[in-house]
Length: 226
Picture 1: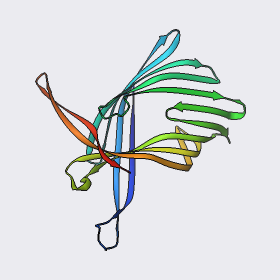
Picture 2: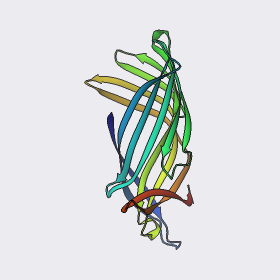
Picture 3: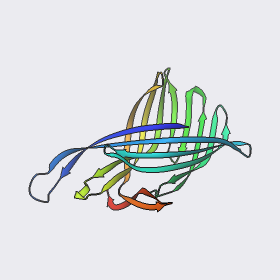
Picture 4: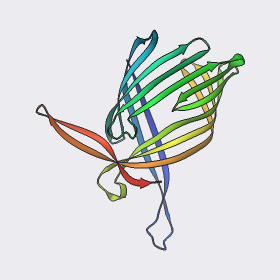
């Protein structure tokens, strides 16, 4: 069992236009996003090979509070695990009514070569070629998928809560240096591509079950694209 915590701060410079001849107005808006999760893992055997089952309960929100609660289930089958090669396949499931793809197959492959070279593939997350250098450093070349998320309030003057979800493809070089005592310094350079951004409306559904009122939050897409 374990926990994970994260915080993301985003500052945007926005251009405002009132469709008149007046000059465009610039303003800066700050967005705060945090997430927390409680994680459970269980190890078993299937056809003589290790299987890892895990479950996560996740919450996220903004500086105004927690906005959403969801879950994630994974099953990972270890096909090979030696000193030089590790390979797994699995399934990733989302317990979230707003998930576009509720079930995703996964594949990982890691192989170490001589002179500190390594191939590290984690699909659908990303793929890297890594090289150990200096005494406690590592240089990586590749690409990975990431998501930037934050909540919107008073969006277009509407008294509702929305969330912006942005898919990003980050490619380039990454240097990591182990500073000791579990601290790692990271320097990244490269290119960021944003294939799609979407805005979802937060919808509250109230259900009475066994005489108790339950409130479920999920996200419904608003047809706004960037």
